[in-house]
Length: 170
Ligand code: FEO
Image (cartoon, rainbow, N blue to C red; front, side, top):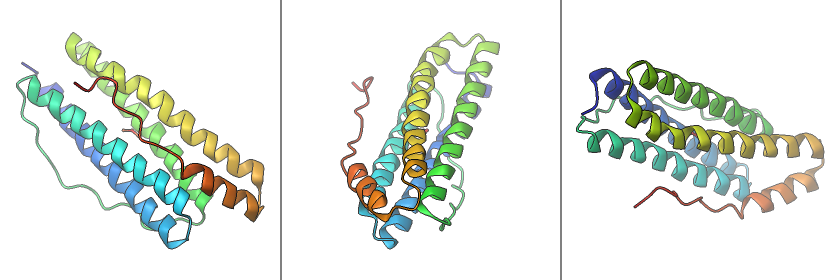
């Protein structure tokens, strides 16, 4: 059975993961409007991954005998100054999510909740990948500068992104 304190913190994180999904779907819509289908596709895959993160946590709370509870999801930003600005905002957001997962790990450790620590290990590892993927795209933007051909090529490259399977799914 999960403690009330841990349950509340995980429920808050489920909300943060759904907000992340919402934010990336808003970015996908922004890129669709800018006629950048590859960037839009990348953000749609990101939306799916965030939904998976939320659902994985939901399942964990339920499996530990807890009660998943939902709050309103904050309205995401609609527009960004440029495609680069959207990806920089993504990188910043992922760093924020990493700090939240670190706080959850700290709480689980303070509560001697070893099961939740083991569960959260997957999220810690996932955040390394999430931050690295976005940082790579931000660096690509910096390399290509104002070259519109570069933007076209990057858009085509990001169109190839596939959702990574959840390795711990049954
Ligand atoms: Fe669920 Fe992108 O962190």
